[in-house]
Amino acid sequence: MTMFTDQAPPAVVLDNRGLEPPQPMMRILESLASLPDGTTLLAINEREPLFLYPELAERGYGYQTTPHPDGSFHITIERAGAATPERSVAPIAPAPNPARATVTVDVREDQRRRKEPFDRIMAAIKALAPDEELLVINTFEPIPLYTVLGRQGFTHAAAQVGPDEWHVRFRRAVE
Image 1 (cartoon, rainbow, N blue to C red):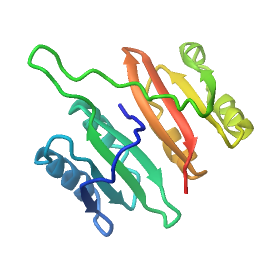
Image 2 (image 1 turned 180 degrees about the vertical axis):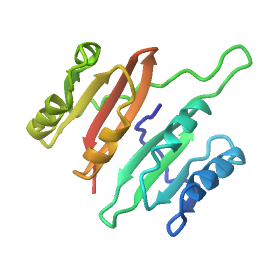
Image 3 (image 1 turned 180 degrees about the horizontal axis):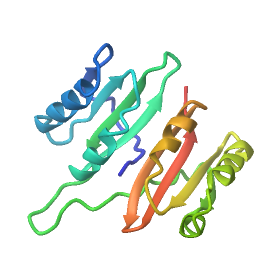
């Protein structure tokens, strides 16, 4: 569950560089447990925290991961929504940017037929204009794709919108 937002700078910065796994993940989760409502956490890691993402979703947090030229990953984390006693936090779909055209690649049928969609996704990425973003609709969260496209300068925002439906938006990182 991830979202892009136009938000104020994070109130808490947690620099995890120099720590070996699982220390960065543990520090992030401990910090989130005491983070005041409405406060954003910026974690700086040497590695992309792939195992952190499901933990954040389970705890009701949204995140945006941005690879930086120095090789670090900046993960902006915020509460996805306020939970009420009657219901848990609902997933927030990544918001489209009205200033950008969106190219959509729906790979759910490929997945059901056990056909690898990687080449279709990479062809769509290669064909993207600078002002376009890619929306991938998949049956699961494509975590390995985050690293592949992150190395090419893309950020991502993901949301599970149904039991077997994930929407993941990829955008070129803004410098």
